[in-house]
Length: 67
Image 1: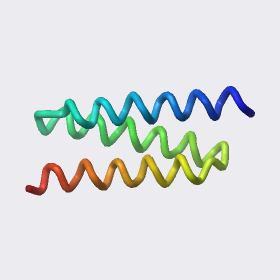
Image 2: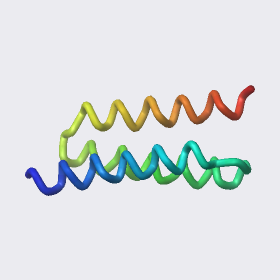
Image 3: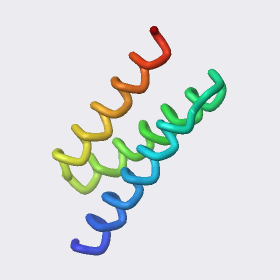
């Protein structure tokens, strides 16, 4: 169980970097889809803390585009 957890954490860090780099609307949509996939993986492993962090990141990304 440790290997999937560390992999999920690494994926979340990478997606966070992608979120910061997203400039166009297409990039924003791609990041949201990646985060949704990550949330599904976190849920399948019942890693609710990581699921919530991914959800928060997705929400933060949405606010960035609303400005």
